[in-house]
Image (tube, rainbow, N blue to C red):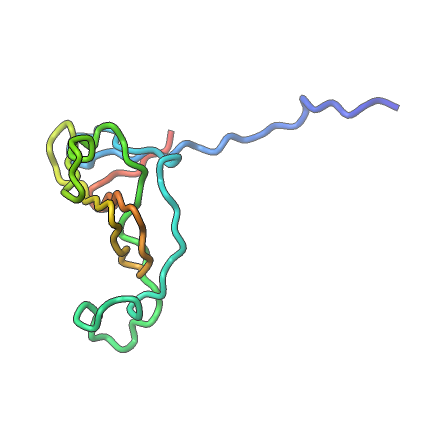
Length: 127
């Protein structure tokens, strides 16, 4: 009996996802640097004043941001700031915020420490 040959199995590599600044197209993060989080309970997690007035809006919204690990291009992090805006190195566009004490995602989850990049300011590209 002949042994099974493992070279016959073709493995499909997943396309690598990278995030670019929407304004200047500079690469700011890759999928490996994204910090996953469990979606929170939506509106129930926010202070009363920050909740929407829509009583039918009960389900947790899609996250409008990604949270990443601190990276070298984040100059204000390297300078020792505790919280500040995150700007693109290429064009100085505001991409998000960071806070070492943490911040709340729009889904209601608390991320600590938080290096938040807004999806509306990024292009998601597959290589």
